[in-house]
Length: 208
Ligand code: S3P
Image 1 (cartoon, rainbow, N blue to C red):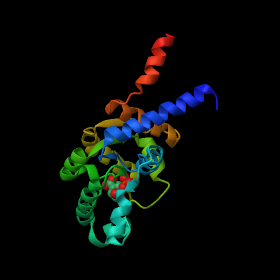
Image 2: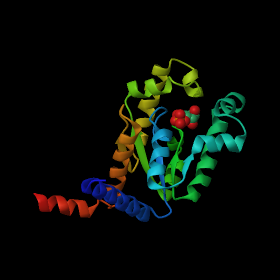
Image 3: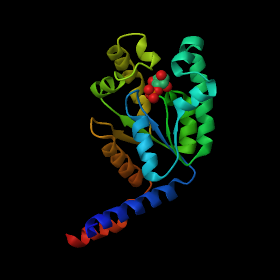
């Protein structure tokens, strides 16, 4: 390993340690529309921070013993939303962790308040084209099965984006490898938590 690489990984180690320390028992909560990359980015972020990763939708499915598609079909959306609220309230007691939530979760005021109290929220913000491309890969989303996905997605963006904008942090989820987005999330988190790698900044200053 070259000296520069070793220094870089030391900086990163330091950044991880600082983020974890400042985070305490709080959860890092990823919010945003279907296809924003919450699960994929969340899993990698958790791995990088050496924290557990929790996917709220999987937990809801485990609690119900049914897939989300089945819950919607058999019991309807209102029933799903109630289960979602309860499961996320429970999960938020289990920090520190990286928690990926379903796209509608943050729309519930109680859930928003619970996230605010127990976590740091990050809106993964993607544009329409990116969202549509990503959601077209699977047909497991009941909200998109009821009409033209583009029309539904546009309606959801108009309704939800102003609410997602209340998140503590907003990170653009572009069409780049997920690890690049993880890096952007990590930097945003570090800045928010005041862990901005002062050692590296000082070195940079000296060189100038
Ligand atoms: C939903 C998003 C889904 C899932 C459910 C409803 C929504 O999760 O919770 O189908 O209301 O946007 P993802 O955002 O992980 O796809």
